[in-house]
Every structure is written in C-alpha cells, then in structure tokens.
Length: 430
Image (tube, rainbow, N blue to C red; front, side, top):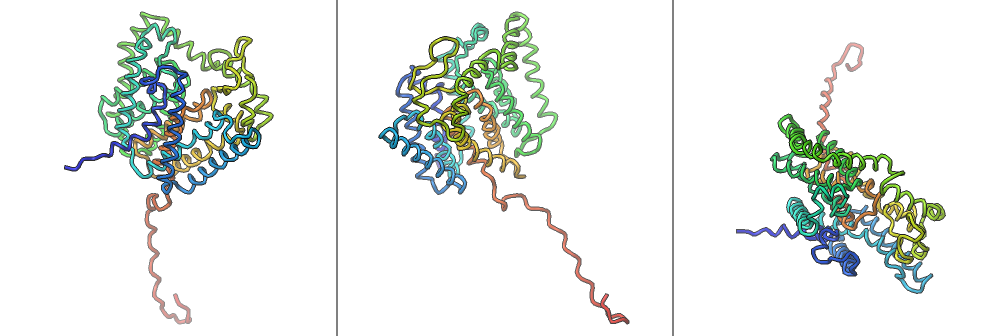
C-alpha cells in the first residue's frame, strides 16, 4: 500500500496563518512578548528559503515584482547607512517591506505543489474554535455581545471568512446540508463578533463569489431549485425559531445591531470610524508633504502626532505610528509608490485571470473572493501578516492562463472548393 504524504504541503501556508493571535495565544499569552516578533522574523526567513529553493517556479511577472521589492529594500538600507551609519537602523520600517516576501514564497511553493485545501480549512476552523473555547468562552455569551466583548480580534474574525466561503462552495458543488450548516454557523459567529469591517468584507466576498457562481465561472456548481432552496430556508428557519425569540426576550439585541449599522453608515461621526478619521487628520499634512515616496526612516523618528481624545499621545514616541489603515500606513512611510508596490501586481494579475473564459475551481474561487476584500479591509486596518501568504497562494492558483489554455474556438467552416473552369464562348472562365 502506497502512503501519501501530500498533507505535508499544507505546512508552509499553515505556518504563515499561525502568525495570527488566535493561534499564537496557545503558546504566548502576553501580546507584548518579544517571541511574537521573533516568530515573524522566522516567517521572513522561511519565505527567503522557499523563494531560493523554488525560484524557478516564479513567473516572469512575479520575478520582476520580486526584483523591485528587493531593490526598494536595498535602497532603503543604503539610505539608512548614509544617514544613520547602519544598514538597518529602524527594523519597524524595514518590516513593512519584508512582510511582502511570503507572497513570493507561497506563490513559488504552490506553483510546484498542490495545496490540500480541505485539510487546511479543517485545521484553521479547528484551531479558531479551540482558541475561542479555551481562552474566550465568555465572549460567546449574550452579555458579551451587548457589551461588545468580542474575544477574537479583527484579524481572527477576518480569517473566519476563509472556511465560511470554502464550505459554501463545497455545498454548491457537492451538496451536503452539513456543509451548508457550517457556513451559516460561521457566518452567524462573524456577525456575533461585531467587527463591522469584517461584516463589510464578508458581504463583498459573498457578492464576488456569488457572481462567479451565477456567471458559471466555478467548475461543478449546480445552480438549481433543489440546491438553492436550503440556502434560503435554513437561515429563515433559524431566524424564526431562535432569532425571533432572542430578540423578543432581549430587545437590547436588536438595538445593539441597529447601533452597529449606524456606526457603519455614520463612520465619520461615531464608532471607531471617527477615531480612524482623527488619526488620518493628524497625519494628513505629512502624507501631502511626501506624496510620492513617503517619509520612510524619517517618519519613524517623527514624534507621535495622534493624541486621540486626551492630551497625551496614544503611543510612545519612536515605537512606530501604529496606523490602523493599510493605506495611511503605506502612504506615510512609502507614499503612493509604497501602495502600488503591494497592490498593483495582484490587482492586475487577478483581474486579468477573472476576465479569461476558463472557469475557476471551487477552492480557487474561494481564495479569489477572499483576496478581493483586502482592498476594502485595508481602509480600516493594516493587513495582517498572514494576508500576504493568502495573496501568494491566490496568485499561484489563479495565475493568468496562457492563450493556449483558453477553450478552443469553434472551427471555422471550410470554404467551398472552387468551381472548375469551364470554357465559354467568350474565352472567360466562369
């Protein structure tokens, strides 16, 4: 009997996903423990190792992008040496460039080895469930919901979208009410955790995924009445049997949901959205003064500009400025070029592939739908380290196909044979 070791190919991406706090909490309890930073450095080392070993599997586009990233990092090191006498004066700033390396590592590795997606989703969902059950069981209570005690931070809630989308697509391609039930349970948990940014990104992912399915761009999907009816009935029955009773017994639940929706629609006036707006206003002048390449290393030395609601800075000087927005972070440190350095190639590659007629597999559609929300997520939060790994695997499995891989066109009817030349009385061929 031949034993398959294909399961080992889940390890590279799983190690990147383990940078999330929901998983590191199993080993490291303190959020400020230096070991967390050391693990991120270890992931950078792993990325460099995989890039070196699997470099030949990078496409020409990915190689050029990698060259640009390495060149920018080298230029920053030269700037550091010229201005401060050492090549890496502020690792906090360099880390923002090194964070991109897992994109290339995951791309190269998974262009060579297939990802066992089902196993990965089981491990991710099991790990997240155990983290919640062991360390934050109180967060699942009604009191925690009303007092916004979430248990999971936003990055962990964001990761929940992956198994939710996966089991939905598994249901649409293979059926099984258990898969559909898992989708709705995870979706309900995402709503319960009250990370409004994740609500929006989940809605966007479902729209993108729904468009792929509706347009016939997902292999094996069966869109018919019997398959769609449970999608409509299951949440309806759950709402009638459980949700209605919950709201009637606790009208505060409905009010809490209304408040969350109001925070989304009035983000500039209330909720955490207004807090982010104040942070943007505090740094807007510096972004406008250095719009192209940002402040880079000098930005790290800039005294803290954000004071929140009090008279004291939110964070101490020379610890980084801890921007909540991916865009503000990159614009401040690296300008418009810094934003384009991260998003331009993935956006171009995925759009190019999306407009090709060859359908996606169900798992690929999940990754593309999830990755498409990164631009929206980045408005409210900086990208978590694991997101770069997901971008890498997405680019690997959804790389633009060569022209030869496109479905062949219907053959053009052959032209009728020419008529035989028939002499005429005028000496002209017919």
